[in-house]
Image (cartoon, rainbow, N blue to C red; front, side, top):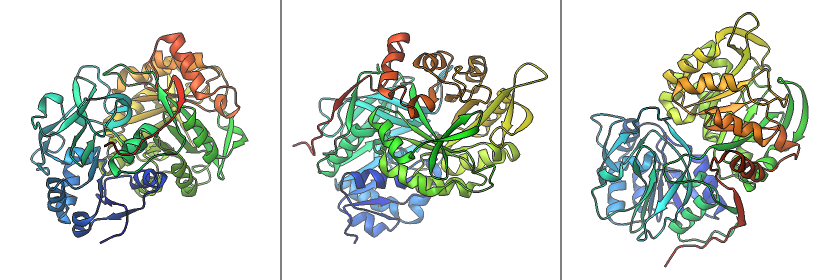
Length: 485
């Protein structure tokens, strides 16, 4: 039996680094295992998961973890199931027809459906807790899911649900005694999520992180504001059209600062990994992950599935693939099939054609034009399993001229998955314009690195100018209690 405070189930389908980092910030030790005896006997267990229902259940059964989890949950021993982990508690899922789940929760798992709906449901949405909830409080949480338990399908009255809205009401979390299941990622939901884990673990959370107010109405994904850290040699760099790079600071310090200011996510791009034909610097990813409790997307130098696995193990929640996907589009399918589309980002650098209307894909940090139609490439990437598009206008990058709105509109209207706008931001007005053009998230670098704007101020300005609700329009200092009586 391990002496760790929390045992994390190794499912082979989870980014364990984010969970371990969250526990460490709460002062809790952790151990990762696939040993059924340890899972059965541990004081507290977390069942995390990303990816697909079928492979997740097959892995649990292969190690006898299915019976161990059923026993401890039926005995009301402290257990936390996260994202796919929550879905595995059910008996069946539309994601894997014919596959039998743990059968602990009497509810099917169904896919999101609706005309014009963006799937995956990716980003921050409002969680509404019921009065009977002991652990969950109302707040804004980070989701990355294509499947869910509809509120109407939860027939077991023993579970107290907390709800969220997206194409109808669905179960964001449910609790019964000492067992908590979350469709969202508490380990990536900032101070609110860390406080929730602390209550479940029966400990106190005293780290002076801010809590963010304002924002969402039920059923509405909040647009994300994403600072981008272009990294080379362990330092942030910034240039114009991917050239003439200058130093812009330490990525760990900047990431932590942006989280405090209300960033919804961080993107790290190793801007020289492809041209120098090397893998991404994993050490930088590990250091940044340890410093933040919000989602982290990492790209640069991803040529094989193994490169993606290494970055996810280091602490990335999503991996972006760019040049390698153009050379071998099958890498998109492979990453998506192994880790899930919510972990798979297709990064597309697009430049206006010189000989015709439209845009073509450029690769190798913009040094090579491919002749590939950028809009068609985004459509193909989504069809192959990308869960998100990171769309950068090479012509606008670093120029301060604003996003290429025509490019954004052309892609957002065709792919059916979230699109992150990138390239050319100089003001909050540019960010608002990107959101109005259809982007689910807007990315910027120089305006934050150069101290021109704080993230929280930009959010307030965007909301005031456009009426678009944002997470963290106001900031106050947190006071986090431990477990409730």
